[in-house]
Image (cartoon, rainbow, N blue to C red; front, top):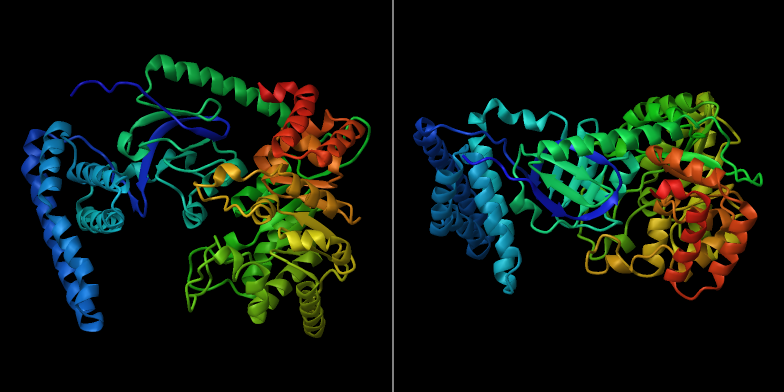
Length: 582
């Protein structure tokens, strides 16, 4: 075989950093099999294994077709006829023979690559019926690979070693299931700066690229690669010269970042003395130790759904939740932990099977609406959080609140939980702070009324932006319209802060170095970001002058377009801490 040639793929950098290692390539719903080279003597055995897998798959599909025909009729059963035809499609078989002879690799890898090629071609045809067949192809691919799995090589170490993860896209459930202790970086074929992949990567400090054309066709499981999250490059089969260059650059960046980490005990305040609490957004237990290591003043947002919706069929009971929340509260002492109650529905994993599909789940049964409609589950979580508050400082806040009525219902349920805990003789903090997420424009507009019922606000800038300007942040057709500096969004943030109670920024805006001057100038009392961003944001705050930020923010509030607002804030950022943009 000829030596691999270095290939450079361009993508959109959404999380900075450099990572080097082996690629693990995952198709939508189907992980790429491990790759290994084979000898000519192994060829007959590989074809025998493949034929056996095809026969097992055909038997499965025939059985499914017959079962569906009995239950639903011929029309529904015809779906499986189409899959059976694709299973031995002559064009696929011809391409498979050609690629197998050329690559001389195990059959799983070659079949995976060939079918992926066909799937990619089908995604771009004009005929909607043909495009819909991609799902059938993916299902057949997954079945064949599963039926070859018993004979998989020990080369599946790619599944467990540290790796760069490459995928067509990552869904919310994909991101929730990631083993973040082994993932070095993320690359996807589609995506935007506000996709789930991008948000997760920034939260965890993982380098990431999205929007890499034909990524699935151009990458192979087990390839060596370099991910340059600064310049938007994925380098396949890097030369020794390239690897050496990036090792030096990686070391320089790590040294500069470590210098920022060592400032963790310095106060988070502007040059003219305005104090801003700098807290952490966390979602996984393995992040707990990083909270103190990065100098966070506690947790400004703990996303409880990642613990609650861990893939099991049942939610953890009150005792299990209490132990988990208590661990976090004790680790953060003497600082406060703000627990966001279950944010399920919409783009999150449901904890129960829905009776009917929602046409627009982002405007449907999600956030606090789920909790209020399931009071037993809601009270179980509230009691667990309240019990944890006896072991340190805890606060609770509620997602997707749209107005006063919901807050009154929440307060009534909290009072019931207090009474139940007193009756049980359980200790809890009677003065535990209560807050709401400001994510819906109606809540922002009612902020001055909501202050009568809650102690603090936390602005979720991602959802507030998408709801204010009616842009789905993960819809690639309109993602370019998602602008947190839209004048309507900025004015709602200002209106919320002016209501007069402590207000945190916990969305993506808070971790954007270019927008920190704007948030400081608008009067935010707290910024909560992923642990990896904390040292950077602290450095930025310490090099800003609040009065200068305030004057700039007043100009921004008079601006008529997002570009002007973004430019005003970035100019002040570049002036105040230029080294962070190198």
